[in-house]
Image (cartoon, rainbow, N blue to C red; front, side):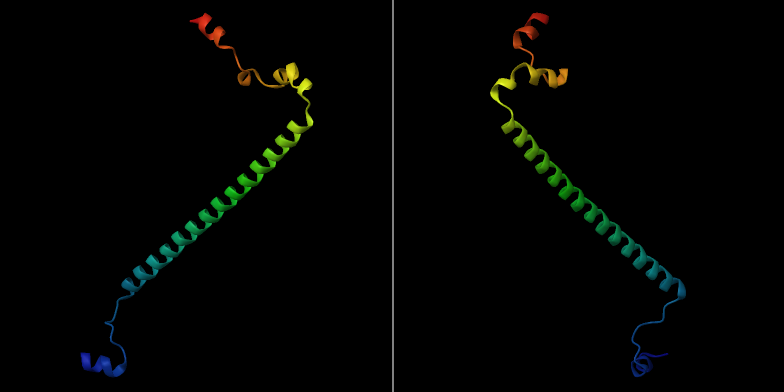
Length: 99
């Protein structure tokens, strides 16, 4: 078929083999899957960030409300026993004596 005949018929693209069509459609499917996975990961990330922000503000609000409810007299020894050993402050002279 000549170029003039292609223009008359309305087709200006060369004929492609079924293998070429298959490769192009497979590439398009893979690209669509990759874009879909990126969108899903983005939605999961946004959801986790919103959940983290929500729980953090909720936890901060509960901590502020419990701090206001405690009196200065109740902060003494009871706060030390409620904390685990790893969170208790150790005076500096104890560290120096061990060296």
